[in-house]
Length: 272
Ligand code: BGC
Picture: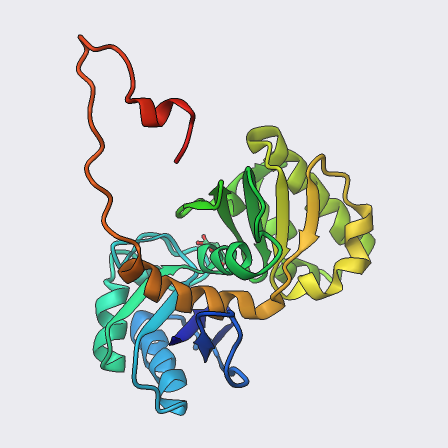
C-alpha cells in the first residue's frame, strides 16, 4: 500500500509517497522551506504544494510540530501563535482535496523507528528524541505510543531544554560537538531521572553525525541514532494515515465498582 507522508517542521515542509510495507520512500522527497511567519494559511498552502508536486491521489498523513489532538493544534512553540485552536486536519484535507490524518511530528518519526528502524522488536520503554529546530519526543511502552509527550520543554538550568539543546541552538551558537554533547547529555540525564527508558533513539538531522557526539553521552540507557535518519518523519506520517483505519476500535474497558475493589484481570499484568 502506498500513502503520501508530509513532514511539516519549523524549517522545512517535505513529503514523498511511502511504501507502507517497508517504510521506504518511493521517490526522492520534495522539500519547501517553511514560510515565515509560519501562519496556518501559509503553511497549509505550502504543504498542499508539496503534495501537488507529485500529483498525488490517495491517502495522506502529516506530522506537525505541535501537540495535535483530534486534528486540532494545541501548542505553538516554533510556529505562529495563531495556530493554537486551528483545525489542521480539516484545513489540510480541504487544501489537498483528500482526507488527511495528522499527528505530532516526533510521534510520527517515533512510530516509523518502532515499526521499521532502531526500535524494531524492542520491548519495554523506548523514548525517541528528535533534535532539530526544537526538541520533540515520542514515548513508547511495549511498542504502544503515549501520544503528545512534550519533553523538549522540561526546564534545564531554568531554561526550556529545546532552547539549550536543539540542533538549531548548536548551529546558531556555533557550538563544538563537545559543547553540544555536554548539553544533550545534561538533558538526557534529566529525562532519565524522570522516566528511566530502556532505549533512547536520537533522530533529526544530527542523527547522521552520531559518531561526533554519541561517544560523549553518559546515559544509563542505550542511546542509538535513528536508522531512518531524516526520512522517519515522512514515513511515520504516512503510517499515521493508515493506523487510524487499520486499528479496530477498542471495546470499552470494563469499569470496576468500589465494591469490587479490584482492577480487571487484563490490566493486572500491566499490559497496554
Ligand atoms: C514542539 C513539539 C515538536 C517539537 C519538534 C517542539 O517545540 O512543542 O510538539 O514535536 O518541537 O518539532
